[in-house]
Amino acid sequence: MKKRKAGRLELERTKWGYFFIAPGIIGFLVFSLGPMLYSLFLSTMEWDIINPMKFVGIENYLNLLQDDLTWKSLRVTFWYTILSVPLIVIVDFLIAMLLNTKVKGISVFRTIFYIPSIIPLVATCAVWMFIYNPTYGLLNGVLRAFHLPVMQFLDRPSTVVPSLAMIALWCSGNTVIIYLAGLQSVSRQLYEAAQMDGAGKLKCLIHITIPMMTPIIFYNVVMAIINSLQTFTQAYIMTEGGPANSSMFLSLMIYNNAFRYRRMGYAAALSWILFVIVGILTAALFASSRKWVFYETKGD
Image 1 (spheres, rainbow, N blue to C red):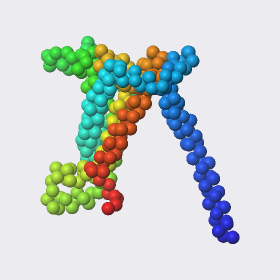
Image 2: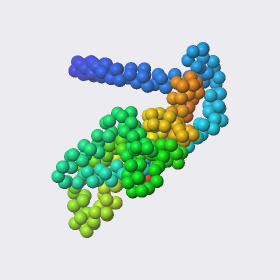
Image 3: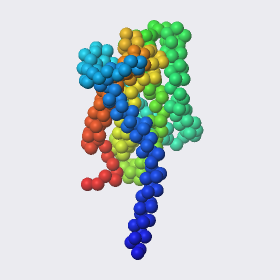
Image 4: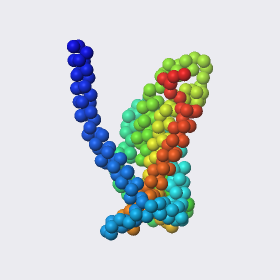
């Protein structure tokens, strides 16, 4: 009798469990998995939104592989990733270490570094367009004050991507906060034991802080790479992919083909290429993490 009651109770709990997670499952199927599968179907079609769809198979994928602009956008996207990810990962780690010190008014500085990450990116782009402006921009004003030549930050192919990478660093306050939380979770006993053995600050950093922070570093690297590969807003607002397509990120190319040129099938194929690239890089990072990421509770 008791077993039957326990079984019915377990069944009721299971039913209620499925009931409460049903909105999340339905939302995932309708708003994530469903659109993904539809875009995969759409990538095999030729469709301009107005006329009926026409099945073309893998023609969209073959065409994009033969498109010079596709390869250029891939180079631009990877170049931006190579520049922005180390900036975000390393500089934000150093900033978090400074913000982890116990000085008067440190909470004010923490807030200052975090605020740019919660400002709408459109507003941030407007501010940086003023900063980079060659005529009355803040940076060029500083250069003129020191009698240095004015720079065309967003109007030269050689400087536009590094200039956009600096904006990514400016907006990465959430990464600083994640680092700060990780630094505060490192046991003080480890530092005390190392100092008793004569270890200095540099050795503590190399042998304690960095190893204990590797899970946080790994997470931030993965998120920084994914975000950088999907960068869109900065180029769309500030450069529109120029000059000479030197800031034509793959996500911007997807947008242009879908909504400007009405090549929905081609855009869907491009989006799946981006998805595969992100998946391969993420899988490679997870595979490499076994060699350099230290988990304190990891079993033998």
